[in-house]
Image (cartoon, rainbow, N blue to C red; front, side, top):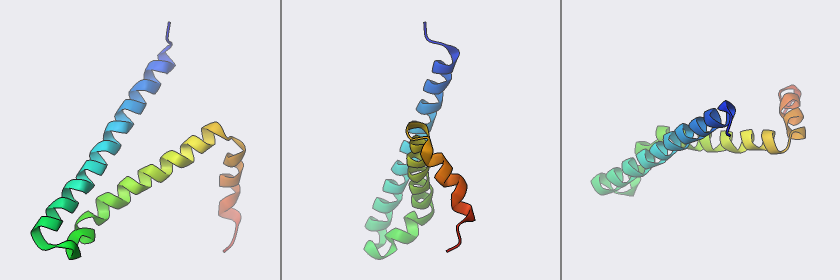
Length: 85
């Protein structure tokens, strides 16, 4: 029998995947609409904010999965703010 943790995990992943899907669908919709309305010059201006949010979610997904599947990497994230560029 699956535990409560498994159900919560499935619910979280389902909601997360739908939110990310809707975000990328929004980017596609804005890009196509801007392309049809004014040509390629205005596409980035139309999709800039939703694109940044969708890409940030994608990067965070990679970072989160690396913390789960490769725990020593978590120490790198803890030390990174102390490095000076």
